[in-house]
Image 1 (tube, rainbow, N blue to C red):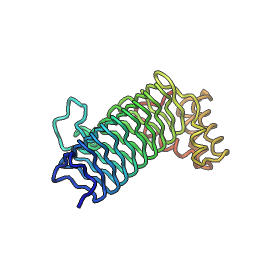
Image 2: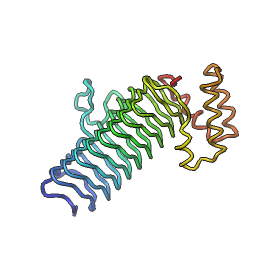
Image 3: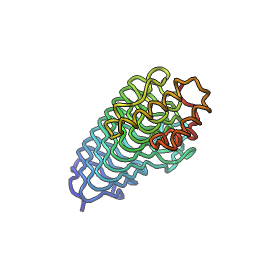
Image 4: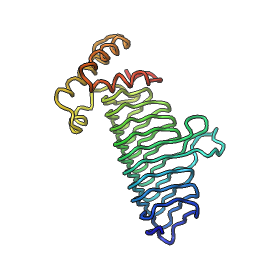
Length: 259
């Protein structure tokens, strides 16, 4: 039997709840919600739609998870949200479900921190170990790879992709794709440097950081045509595995790279 549910919460009888979760006062859990073990749902949280949540996630007050996408074409289709394990959703975070016009699902990985009032729109894919600072906002269909940091008030245009270990500075407007490891700044976002501090903290060696810096210089400082710069980085990746993230990212870019 489920324990830790405040009697003032409203939980649909058909919701699937692990036995050890906690649900605070005045929270609402919809009929098609599936919540895994160890989750803590604070007061005044709304989790609705076809939403599947893994283990050990925490939701602070006034978070809204799984509600309808903010898309005028949405016609009530049974689209989904899928959330992994160990995520934290702070106050007023919103995660909308997918649309039938795209993947039909919004996906969040593991161990992410969504600070107050951040937003994940429909059909987004968020990896693992990311940080969304206050009011960081994704439009629809955005892909965020692992270990990405979005500083406060960041806005990401629909269909953009941001590569692994990238850092987006505060108040930045991302309108094109941001390659792995890159620190992006400005309106619109421009490449500033690599996220050297972040990747060093994550265990990259001094040599690996230097190799990534050299790849960044090839891409952004060498004045090579883009195709030639990509070819140079691809050759270097054969002996420098840390550059494979660049190689894998380039073919995925549909909105062009920030330049």
